[in-house]
Structures are given as structure tokens and as C-alpha cells.
Image (cartoon, rainbow, N blue to C red; front, side):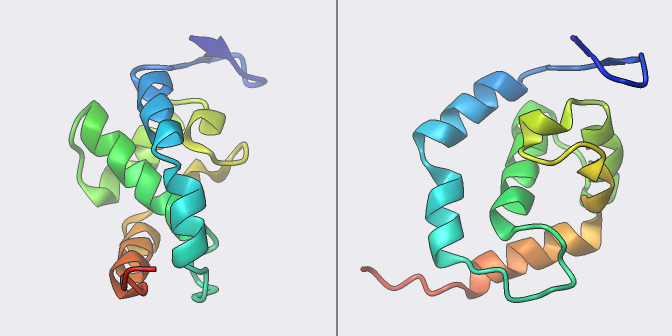
Length: 109
């Protein structure tokens, strides 16, 4: 566990292992290239929303409305988020991130 400035411990859980898989798959760069941030309501890049969804599913399935609570227990840097940004992970934003992934141009390059 790591200590934060608020002096309560944050969990690491399986996030370092999950991040290793996501890094090796180059998910963030691939999705960042093909899934642009066109909806300014998101305040969150679609690859981050998708990666957070994967992380919560792979660590222990949780509903989207509980994603912010789940993420607040971890060091945000492990989720690719700036400090204090766990509150951005709500069901509406992550759902829009998933929508943008669905609407992305999936034609072969």
C-alpha cells in the first residue's frame, strides 16, 4: 500500500499487474489514436474510461455507478488519472467513453 498526503493508505490490489497487461497491449495509445475525445462533457479521455472499466472488471466486477467509489480506494496514478480525478469516473462519463469506443472507426487500416 502507498501513503497519500491525506495520510490514509491507498490500495494497490491487482492494478500493477492489470496495468502491465494494458501497457503491453498498448491499449491507451491504440485507443487514443482511433477514439478521439469529441464529447467535451466527458472530461475524461475515452481510453482512460475504458481502461478503468477493464480494471474494475478484471479485479472484481462492480457496477458502473460504483466505479468512482472503487477507484477512490486506489492510487489514481495506477488508473492513469491525475490525483483527485477518481470522482470523474461516474456511470455517465464511463458510459459515454464506451459509446465513443463503439462509434469509433473500426475499419481495418
